[in-house]
Image 1 (cartoon, rainbow, N blue to C red):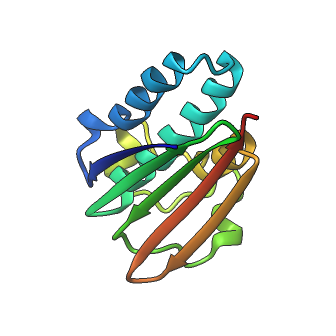
Image 2 (cartoon, rainbow, N blue to C red):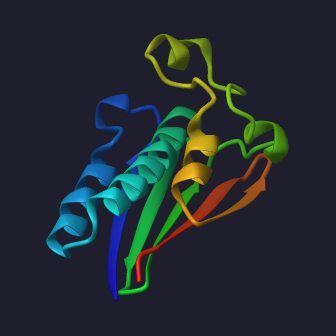
Image 3 (cartoon, rainbow, N blue to C red):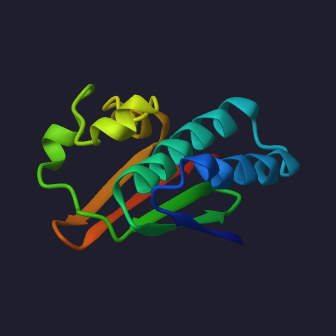
Length: 138
């Protein structure tokens, strides 16, 4: 198993996407099918942007095995008050400032769900959110 870790800085949109692009480079080295890499990178990018947009800080951990890619995104943000609502396309709690930058369209969690085989959301209002995303490859 290969384990990759990335620290994510809340509010730093200039670095949003760094972790997902690094994971993409690593996955290409393992000869994983390009469509699977695309799914993984889209899901990871959405999770990464959510951390940047909503949390003070966070981290992304990626576990690579021959059977699956497991991505865990943890943050110390505000938590998600209504997960069911947050899963609806177009629903967003992003600030006006974040939306003006072109983020916060309310597609993050729906896009993650579309691109992975399993999504588990563990969230606590006032504490933070952990997303566990699994994409089967084997």
